[in-house]
Length: 99
Image 1 (tube, rainbow, N blue to C red):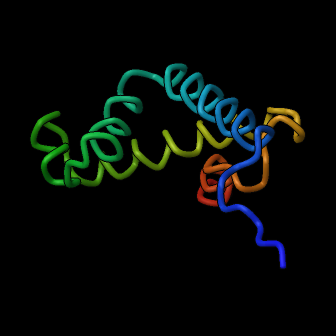
Image 2 (image 1 turned 180 degrees about the vertical axis):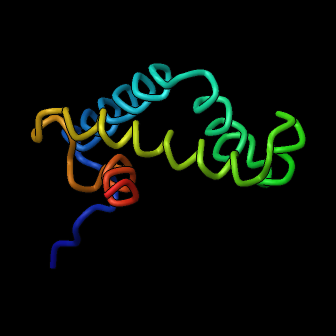
């Protein structure tokens, strides 16, 4: 009996690395106000209230900026040719959220 390896194949590793580059470029291309909120909420894991207080904006504004940031990243992702982004890529999450 042969068991499938849980380790990613070389093709999957390359595709994942490419996905990370695409996502990084999309984040860097965001307007500063969107990128800042995205980084605070998703990277630094601040709450909406903490991000709002830090930026001196309302919580609703944090939510709007975060939604717009994710939408912009998803649009960038959707412009990438299909073979470059595997179906298991975390970038598909952006596409699902934005649609």
